[in-house]
View (cartoon, rainbow, N blue to C red):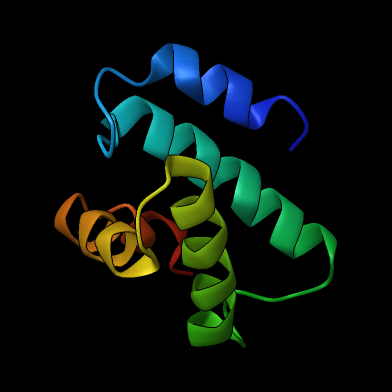
Length: 82
């Protein structure tokens, strides 16, 4: 995650904006990290997404609720259902 905030500043067009491409990229990174720590999305769906949305909220400087709504709106979470 080192350098993530710097890269995000370059990518962000306006404060609080969450560009779709960046959201997808950072979500993929978080999912890989969560799985790498042994957290199963299948067995711990809600817990895993709480961790992911909290991290993404910090990354994009918005609340985890904003991230949750955006992930649902763009059907991003559903891409990880097994």
